[in-house]
Amino acid sequence: MLSPWSGRVNTSRPRIAYAGAPGIDTTTLNAHGIAHNVELSGIPVGGTPQQIADWADINVAKAIDADAVYFEVSNEVNQPWMSGRGADAYVRDGLRQVTDRLTAAGSPMKVMNAGLGGMDYIWTENFHAAGGWDLIDAFAFHPGRGNFTPDYAPPPSEWTQGSAGSYWNFLGALRKAREVVDAYGGNKELWLTEAYASTKPNAWWTDTYRNAAENVLLTLALAKSEGVRGVNWYQLHDSTIHHPQEADPDNVEYHFGLMNRDTSVKPSLLAFATAARVLDRADFVRHLAFADPDIKGLLFTTPEGPVSILWSRKDGYVLNAGHTADSWYASPEPWTDPWPTKTDVVAHSGTVNGTVRELNCIGQERTLTAAGGKVTLRLDGAPRVYYGLAANPDWK
Image (cartoon, rainbow, N blue to C red):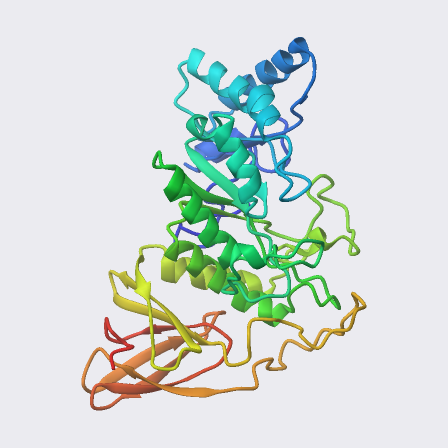
């Protein structure tokens, strides 16, 4: 897992690091000044008091020994999705057992709930009612995404369930999480302990290589805009998490890497690097509002001045829209432009006459010339980064 708020592509804060865990050992991480978290599962929900106590004793000791900064107590326990089942038992047999032991040990470790599969607000309501909200420092969830752009944000009342349901959207889920965190209070941090852009080939539910790179940049920019404290990217290279040397191309999760299995680079890794460079020291200001409602944008302040990320939704929010009922879909070649509609937009530049830098999602740059305090941008569904626009580029 990687976190992007480091200004470069590196392991900023692994989600899972403890003695015996796969990946880099904690001694090496500490030597390089890399903070690390733990996620430990296997809560014996409904078990005997001895089973519950044994699980908590072993796993709290493991987290303390690892010198973890955050303890994410289990993973995706909210199944079946949106059923609300098991929240009270999770708090009773898992979360409270952990927090009681950390308190008794005088540990400063922060605690997260089990990262939820999707923004399951029904389970979260039951979790809050069971007293779980007061036990956590950070609220964690996994905004899974299907063949939708990351800025697709249907209201929760319209979410459909199932393996190809709109429940698996990014921005709508993130906004609902933000709403819940603000409503329940307690100044809880918001974490995405799994975010991804799967590139399983010839499957309409997942991203093409080209769309994945665009979606990595936009995912991280939107997370920043909603005040997310940390994003763990799932994952560095194609792999199956429990058998890291195994190749399993039929498994959709095998294709979540920013790199291929042999660690050759996907466009996604270049997009991650672009996001890190642009967003590391950026502060979100507002969503931009051009006269054309299909033109979307985010405005940030940075030490280098205002930065805008702009795109168009003239071609909609659904990716691979031409698919049939079959799960198979012939992936287009990465050099095939999937956005047919190009829209020229006049933006307010930072100088009367000067230049504006444009970066695409993989960091390729070109220079545009402003005149009379204006510059014309050609936008489509791919997000682009602009340096040199005014702090009000959407000025009418």
